[in-house]
Length: 105
Image 1 (cartoon, rainbow, N blue to C red):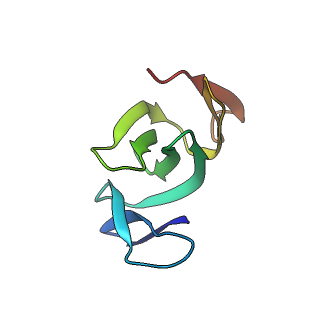
Image 2: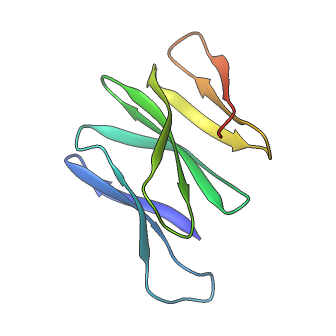
């Protein structure tokens, strides 16, 4: 199970096994006004969109740990996210609802 918690100054993306246990940090959200507007899982990785007032991003982190990677920045209110085996898709809501795509390495 993956979820996020946070307040207007900082936030942390967390994971915990479905059968319980201690939560573990997956990533840290920017220390600005933000909103996680989508979470997707695919092949041992988690993908999420972060919408904030200045610079929306699409992020990726391995569920095993490691530093989160920015897949796309400069997005205008990215919302929703879907990950296939090859690409990640989201809606850039404030830019007339354009469907965006990136193929992670």
